[in-house]
Length: 348
Length: 257
Image 1 (cartoon, rainbow over the protein chains, first blue to last red):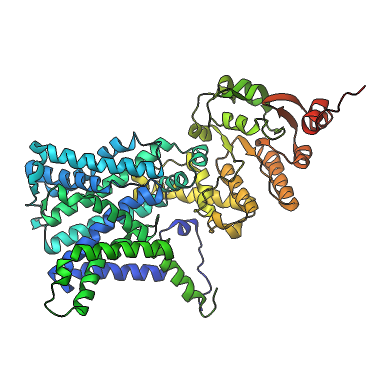
Image 2: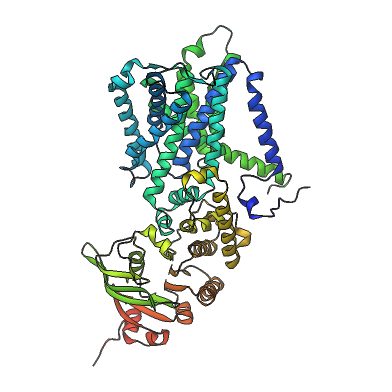
């Protein structure tokens, strides 16, 4: 029987993991992800790309809302900035995608300062409303800045190539998304165990005490805004590559709410939670579709007619159920089940 | 040598004068206690020293430097740390992380090297973690180190808060009602820690305290405030026999004919 897991150096204490079981599972996951294009059909691979983009966006928002405690309802705005930044630079200015994608993130990070600086003293609901207003401003600017954004006509995004591969469909898009999401997850994990991550957590839990410990609130809140928006901007750029046509309708309020739902369902403040939440919420519509197809008689158009209504109802129901029964989200569920099995057959 | 010096410090909240023309000097290596009835302005004075409020008038000097205008977050790197009257721990975080936050001003990693977490940034984290372990050992909270602070008892949380302040490696430690709400055993332990800090590490301690037992036992110097003003100061013995102090705490005897 395993009695414990012992550490022999301080380096082990601060490592992401030194547990052989965890390492083996991560290795298995990496192999599975690398082999996915061989095993999955085009539709499933596309779905996996959507999941990975949601992971990037969820991890980005989690740094701001989960870790630093700054609630943002403006994610759609940052996604739009990242997507348009990438699309405009690539299509109109002929930048290669490996440059325009991060540039979209950088633009998103710079724009986040416009929201961040005036809302430094805001918390909770007040900040949520401010960021919401920001996303409306962004969509209006995009709509009226026709010379750059083509206003209501939208932009066709095409011709993204890396090493001669078209990274807008199939395995190349998948591998690009996989690379970005793995990089973002590692970056977020590292930030969270550094002085930055601790400063953010301190600000979330007790901002006056954080100041007394030498944490400059202005600096760290703005850093949280910028890094989070950079990551969300990357997600926006990936969306523009995947759907190949962007206009302002893509980035509606519902997207911001879905982003919040991802990190709340996953478990606020936890990166693993954000990943789980992204998988769960992206696959939920698929599960609903399959479930309805099983129940309904073949050829029934009930589901396809009411797809948005059904989805909305189920989303709402799932969120309410989680908040009521499992406020610490999927990651809380995971921790509880781990505890249950390691203590079994005892209750605790 | 004086470490902390207040000159004519006054704080007004609208028409209310919370701190009125206070001057005091905390000498290097002293345990200096600030006492007084509730509402005397002790905590406000602490908040002025740690720059949480700006002073209305007067100057504050630390280590011969004028720190009146220095923002709160810059005080930690100068060597001032504090605890709060009502618990101000980061309650969702583990004990270790709480203490590591105290080391913030000693770490240098920028966002890029923190995100990569390799080489210098990693070595720095390892050293920080070792330092945090030393503090955990000093405070005898080894078995709590990985628990979220919110799940600990009040006394344990206070101890974590003290650990977090020690991690700043301060020259001056401000303790705001450290032992309130603790039982006799916990009080004695905290008293012993404070004496150890002074005697082993040469730390200067400036504390607000209601517990007269601790104040009289370990203080080198006591200052008494009432209604925002200083009414007495001196050694514990001098203060406890001062008639103004007795009046402030117990009320004055009616002068009858």
